[in-house]
Length: 384
Image 1 (tube, helix red, strand yellow):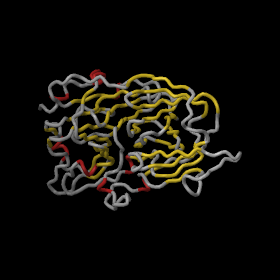
Image 2 (tube, helix red, strand yellow):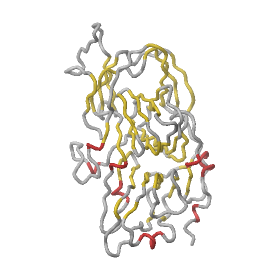
Image 3 (cartoon, one colour):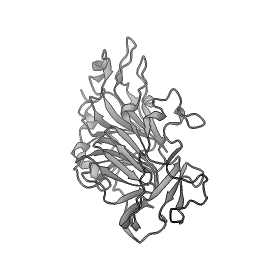
Image 4 (tube, one colour):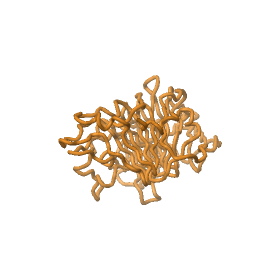
């Protein structure tokens, strides 16, 4: 949750002299969004972050979308995505539109270089694996169930502390924030929010790297991936303060909102971006009206596409899915529980499901490479 944080050493007054032990000046960098009107942090570097040794274009970034065909519900089994490579190389994207792209990654090694997304925030959901994010803001450890929010422009790399990991990845073209209805005019989370500031973890340790050598930062910007070589370590900040930094929130700290009858998906909302929301389905008690039907009612997505990423447990309304499955229920088509799931839910007291849902308010397109992971019979799985 963005709130004021200070880590390391900063001068008493911003934009004033801040000197090293040898008398030289530290280099102050303002990192902010929306020009000078969004959230921002001030970072103090040992070396000038503008100093680059070499630059080279790596590739254009584009996704090969499938041609439009009959509108239908889709199911992709991402558990069979091959593991290998580092966090950036391992990304396999499945869905996207003008606002975001959604995919998975199964890296097996730490990143030997650093990465900076200059086109938008990133949301990383940790399905499996442990490690840390090393960034210009310090180290942020992660564990299964964590959401990691990486702000636009953050120089970072993913360091694995397990032999393998599995991530759900959202590349956003806008900032990712907690829902507005859970915040007051000052940005503080309100009492009816399913989480509070204590649940959010910020970078834990800042250690300025005063090292010489050859260090690569790969930057995504303007539809390209570009390599920049520096002769000093890019994580050379001695201190920073502000509201812009990576943070972690565990899905296990989401406190579900329940009721006498089935609650709409909006009560599960955890984050929002421009034209989309992210929701968390977590273990919870079922509805307690004596005639309640815990399974969701059929609903029509007349203005949004619904994506579900299944993490663990038995999802109350679905058959034929497994851990790592992604389902897409597009706008224009009604969807709801599979046959037998409504009756089967009656009388049950709780669910142990764990899933991440992303609702988009513009239609999603399917990346062609996703076809090899698709279950072509999913559309017909509601037949008796």
